[in-house]
Length: 272
Image 1 (cartoon, helix red, strand yellow):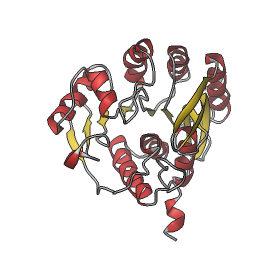
Image 2 (cartoon, helix red, strand yellow):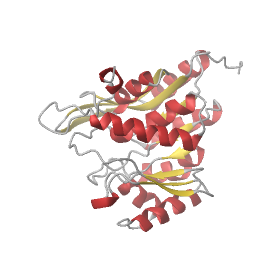
Image 3 (cartoon, one colour):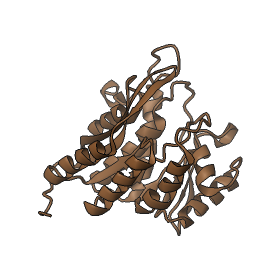
Image 4 (cartoon, one colour):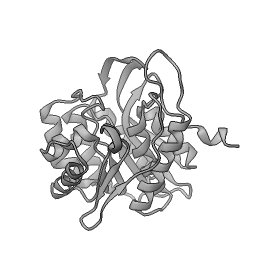
């Protein structure tokens, strides 16, 4: 295989689904990349028909089409960091894992989109097993929410100690670093995340923003981590900067539609 050339401009890739409502998925990822001054590329895994009220339909891309998108970008432009979002099924996960390994794609951020913040299962058991055993071990960091962390660790999660135990258990399964997100936790734990990388076990907290318009926070966080990695920042710094970005985006969340609106990815424009 010829040597992959690198652009002087930082490049990030999102491998995820499309959100027709524009609040999450590749739409959220590409906006997040743009506001970090990182060129965003994408490999589309599925198309959803959704809005602020929910998801009405999901259509998967063929696994071969996902692979072709990744190869087209990496072979020509090069990618400095990559994130995964909704991969939907085992076949897509398998080609993504294969491409990450064969193309030597580093700085992989895995947002294990398999359970919504409300606790609804989004993928089947076979896909979850493949994600746990084959994709997560390739990641620089995995960013499960409370419910995803429960599945990946096999532990109930109700307290901060539970979050810490889950982070350590997921790390033992092969992840290089774990960020268990507390957005779905209750009371004072809401918004507190737990980081573990094998040596450092820390709680990360920023100010709580009182808004119901939080659609796309998980996608946005993982995309911001990915963007900062593409910019050359170390992993822990990338995570902290990403949390700050999401907090500010929540302050400018969009009150649109009849349901849960998205975070305001373009808040920097409002600060000028």
